[in-house]
Length: 438
Image (cartoon, rainbow, N blue to C red; front, side):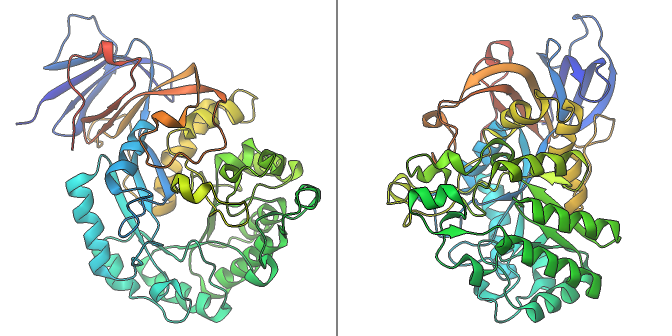
């Protein structure tokens, strides 16, 4: 039986107006000016002026299933997602086994139906086993529901293979999501090449390892007309290459992640493996270039590259520990703290970069505060301060460099298809209903 829900006296994320939003059957049935408290529905939630927006979408996460459930599962990862305000995520295929055929795409859909707290959009591998040797069956995976293709975690080193992938994916309208890294330049590096790496005695990865591949794939987008989406860009040279490609009208889009505008290589401190990711944290000049690329539209959307690992893996010496950090539960706060409060972007633009923009990049259905739209919504308090404590994360991963940081911006509640999927502890006293479980 479908219940009716009224979110009362919320502030519209775009207009700032106070509105009442009614939901039934997983769909918004009306958005009207906020009315008197006597106007109730079967379930009524008092938003008390909190900001209501379309649910966030993260197009770059690692849910680690199949095969790596000690790091994360569909259940735990999507639970972390809704806690972070995300109503949909796109999950990378570098699992064990690799998601490189339609059967594994369908398996992810089935697992999400059983265990998921939000929508999950599988990304299929470009090459079989992500080995870079033979194209995977992209058409079959697209028919099964893959929204994009990527060998993320590994670059497609062969320009010929990348060309064929773009030509193959073009007719089905799917982008190739590129992890840009020239392995011959990366070598055995573990952090950004520069004075900090020299001081710590750690082998470095030059930013050119990323930038050279970005230039190459911009040229291949021009050659083939295929869509290229650049994942987790981290340095000034890469942004310049994308900026130039867009001036030329090429079919390219790009994302970056909160850690690249929040931190530099200095965050590694005394060999903190929780600050080890790939691409690595760069220089202060690159951090500033990241912000500039967000401001001028070179960056199309934001993503977390949520990459959970076990505590034992991250306890290893720096050069043995895996790359990657978690990010779903801190994304909104780091966006407000690092971009909105300093005045780099408006709050409205920041929300757009997490909601409308990623939906456009991957061609996902739009979500609006309007009648007939799916009720995938998030309620936000942009001014709330809190301290990052990974011990209370819903993700199985605790590997974050932001432990102990004071941040601003809290997710109060998240609805997926009208179902209450998450409430923050500070908000639960206002709720007449229990959080839905899966």
